[in-house]
Every structure is written in C-alpha cells, then in structure tokens.
Amino acid sequence: GISVAVDYGQNQTTAQMGDGSVITGAHDLELESTLGQEMVTEAKNGSKGSTGISPVVAVAITANDTDATIGTNASALTVGGDLQAHATLTDQVSTTAEGDTESDSTGVAISVAVAVVNDSALATTARNLDASSGAVTFAASTISRSDAEAKAGAKGGTQQDDKKSHDDSKGAQ
Image (cartoon, rainbow, N blue to C red; front, side):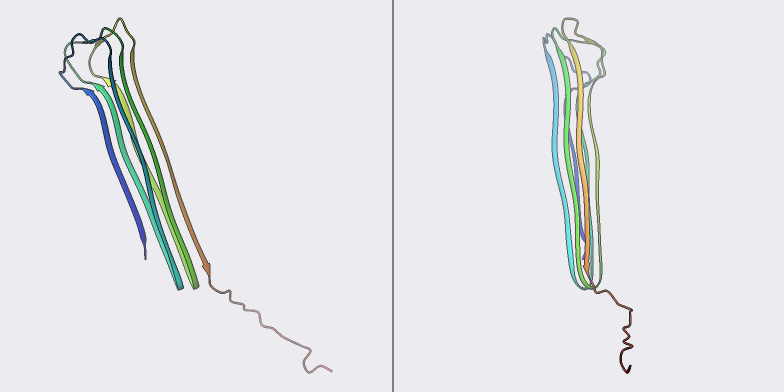
C-alpha cells in the first residue's frame, strides 16, 4: 500500500492599534506579537513478498504571520516616552518519508518528502508619530527552520547467473 502524510499549519498573531484608534497621555507604548510553532510530519511504509512496492509521501506546509502594527489616523500618535513595536516568529518544520521493501524477486521503494514554509513577521505604522522625548523602535524577526528527509531501501531477489560450467576433463585419457 501507499503511505501519505500531509500537515498544514496556518497561524496568525497580531498586536495592533486599529485604524482610527486614539490613545492620549501615553508615556511608553509597546506592541508585541510573538508566534512559535513546531511541526513534525512523518510517513513510513514497508512491504515484503515476491514483489514488493513501498511508495511513501510526506508533505508539510506552513503559512504563519505575526504583525505589530499601528493603523491609520488623520492625527499623529503622540507618545511621551518610548514607542516599541516588535513582531517575532519562530517556526521549526521537520518532514520525513521512509520506505523499505524486501522482496524475493522485484522490489521498489520510493520516498518523497516536501516542506513548504511561508512565514512572515511585520512591524509597521500607517500614521505619523510624535515621540520626540523617547526612542522609537520597529523590529520584526522571522526564524524558520525546515528539513525534509526521504529514505528508500529495497533488498532481496536473487541474481541470475548466465554462466554455464564446462568440464573438459571428463573422458580425457
């Protein structure tokens, strides 16, 4: 038989001041959005017999977003101290496909592993800012690690020998 494993993860985190929002008298303002994900996808298969076939497919897909945003407004956002907007995303994806075939005659093992990682982090503003007495920081970080490993093995069968033996010593005197 065939073995198929499919994993799909789509996540979003947001720290946001929405469009038109107003904050007055703020000293320090911090927006922080953090997202972490670990995805493990495994498919294994094996076959045994006179003819063995082991197809294995593992697919992992992630689409993650984390945002720290300040939306639009006609007036500037005034902060008396520091303004910080941080978006941090960490994603770890591991995909494994493993097939093993033992046969007496014909053996086929096929393994395919695919990892598709589409992640983003964004820290931004869509309005004017007034933070003349403090520091303004917009920082975004995306760390995505992915690995895909496919293993396939086939063993068995017998080697055919087309050699013919000949003994000239028989009948010789």
